[in-house]
Image (cartoon, rainbow, N blue to C red):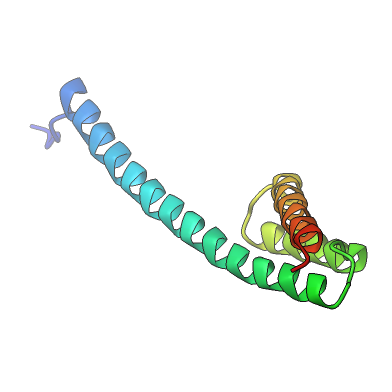
Length: 110
């Protein structure tokens, strides 16, 4: 006589997969909220920087700082096991938006 464990049924496998999917999606939803609120907070600071630059007639773009930030983010991405090219593209998108806001503040006269 052998002690065999009953094999899970296809229905059990599907139910487990559905439960795991639900957990992953809940985590994704929480992380999306964190990303949105974090970006909102980041843009509050970059808006303040834009006003400060406009008040002191500083250029809206700082290529040295931008290059440093891209390098830093690529390093962070590697540490986080995230594609550095994706991280770089994401930061470049944010930088373009920030520069656009800074130019807007400059054109509005702070």
